[in-house]
Image 1: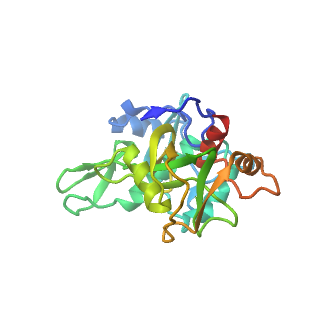
Image 2: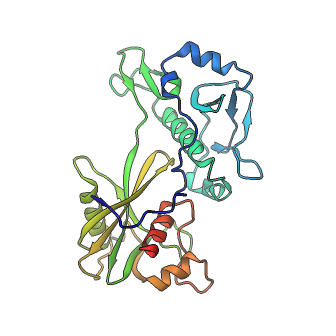
Image 3: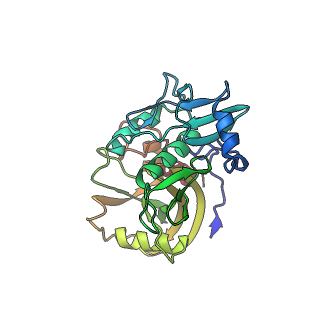
Length: 288
């Protein structure tokens, strides 16, 4: 899989470097305990299933009381988080992302994904016994059989198919009115990224594609996916929509995409929000 001819803008949401994850410290429990007692240490505040944000979209911090998850070092400041409780329907929380500072997004993504994984993996997948948090929250260990388990990341391809200067977008019933976005789907076992792109486009929209190119990736912490953005060339424009997956799918012209990305009131569709990699993928396509 080859990169596209143009690079995406560097500000893909959630995809920045974040803070120093300090991997070398994770296997030193005594050192982590000392860091948690440091006057400089801080702990994420949580509210309604997400880290709390202040009025400027920055993460809120408090004194360390539950250093279950070691997020890393922000300069000389150790950063921790509790395994906070979930907050119901994750989709209802997406509105908060519009206010999140881009520089804070990678840290929020790590904290949300880690906390969610620990909530869902309290028992050993090998023997069923309870497991415990180890390595600063970056794994769990079973006290019965000794198996160690690590946070998983689920790869998801998200892609634009292009035909004759138009791009294929679809909408799901849960989308806001008029919103269209790039098609996407999980990579299956024993499958390459190229094969996943081709399979998903054929399954959901009935198109055959070639020339699959990798564009960029984005961690998506709901609960723990890696969005892998790709571009492909379609061999035809006839669509056969899988209505169990999509409510609609259409080909859009460059002018229609430009209007939607600019937020024009008469645009033919509503573009994906800036924090979604589908938004960056459309920007890439327009710049190519």
